[in-house]
Structures are given as C-alpha cells and as structure tokens.
Length: 208
Image (cartoon, rainbow, N blue to C red; front, top):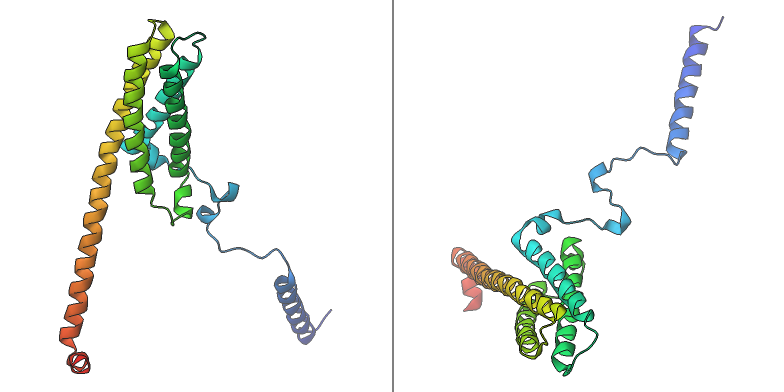
C-alpha cells in the first residue's frame, strides 16, 4: 500500500496535469450566450416590422404591384399600346424597388448601411409610386379596350395607388417626427452646454 505522502504527491501531480491539459485543450467552455449567436451571416427576420402598419402596407404594395404586372402581361394585343407599356413599366419598377426595401427593412439590412437615410428613401419611393401608379391607371383606363385583363390591371393599379398613398402619409408623419426630435435634442444639448458654462466661471474668464 502507498503511504499518505505518496498519495498526496500523486494527487498533486494529477491536479497539475489536468490543469495543464485543460489550458492547452482547444475545447474550452464558452461564456457567450446562446441568444447572441447568429446564423446565416447574422440575418434575422424583423417580425415586429412586419406586424406594424408600415410593414403590412409595404407587403400589400408588393403583392398588388405584382398582380397588376401579371394582369398587364397577359394582354396579347393592343392598339394603341403606349398606355399599356407605361403601366407595365410603373408596376414592374414599383414591385422591384418596394420588394428590395421590404427585404432591407424586414431583415434589418438597412442598419448595416447607415450612410443612407432610409426614411427619406422610403418616402421618395412611396411618393413617386403613388403619383406614377395613379397616372398609369388613369391612362390605362382611358385607353383600354374593355378586356378583362385590362380592367383587372386598372383596378389593382388604383388599389396600389391607395396603399402607396397611405404609406406616404405615414412616411411623412415619421419624417416630421424625426425632425422635431432632432431639433429638441439640439435645443437640450445647447441648454446643457450653456448651463455648464454658467456654472464654471473660469470658462467665462477665459472667454473674456
């Protein structure tokens, strides 16, 4: 049997060996929370945006623009065709641009490009889409040949105009709110700086 001193020496060697092997092992326990680990390059669906009014309106815009584009593409014959071509261009452009913005906002990709003012970008897109969809729908309604596809395209064009107009109104409200918040923050910052100067007379002496 081993003596007590030999057992103590053996336990000390074992503990030091385990510490060294643990330090050199590549499988170290991580302290990173599981919730902070992201997959697919950090892409996550921003479901709160899709639940709010701007997200729902933008989703409706994409659907209505796509249906209007499909309706106008089913028309095989036209004379004159200028109104049809103009409506086709407007519906396709609105579908592509609004679809890209929907992906940017729903996946939080816009936060990775802070150089772009996304509120102004969304406001410009919705405003121009409202105007051009309204004009294209009126022109197509005036030049249509009573075909079912043309009538359906006109109906969905006016529906898309209404949805884009509602989103434009919300975008203008948000833009005004941001301007007011920025002016309020600047006023508070100026008041804070003036109070700091008043409370420190040595700064006033240096200024004079």
